[in-house]
Length: 104
Image (cartoon, rainbow, N blue to C red; front, side):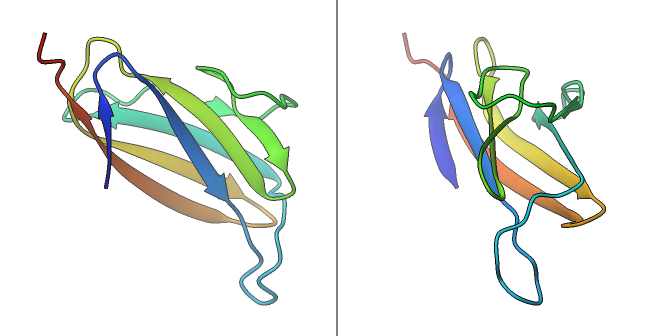
């Protein structure tokens, strides 16, 4: 599990592949949300057309590869991100991380 410092921007990346051919594919729809501990999940964001990841936006970096950023300002503990895709490349991918409290 990856560790990040409170206040960091966390880079969440997912890669989608065809299970039969193991080749990269772009799903019909790509969505993302994340939560820290027992907090409510963040709003679900959906890929539109971005090519540069920022907080609140999913970017397509290349065929089958998507990325977004999560803002860990003021939060710490175990977090889990969820990527969800439908249609071509349907999948659910969970990405757990730990956000360490700032000791200062």
